[in-house]
Length: 167
Image (cartoon, rainbow, N blue to C red; front, top):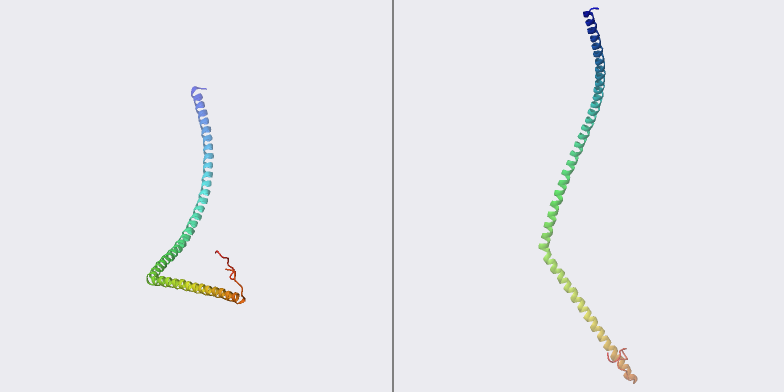
């Protein structure tokens, strides 16, 4: 074998090793591409699920917006009611002030007058009752004395009316 044949043989062996190494690299690269394709498919499924969730979230947000619109309408109604209540309160306050200004003074006078009349009537009634009781007591004493004088008895001081002397 000549030197050129040995060199050709070495070159062909090196080329065969290089070809085998290239096949090994391509095989590994094929597995990487298969794995990448599987990941892309999984990502696609995940993206589809995410898209569905985003659509559901969008529908939920739309429902929340509708609910908020209804709440805002009700709040507008409550604001109108509150304004009416405030107006009514102002009117009642004005009427109260008007009543106090126009009828309050005379009503206080009437109440004071009626109180005075009641007090005077009660005092008069009391004094009349006291005077009647005193006159009745005097009449009873004098009647007892008259009966004792007619019977010839000497009455003990205060015995006829149940009182003791010294009081």
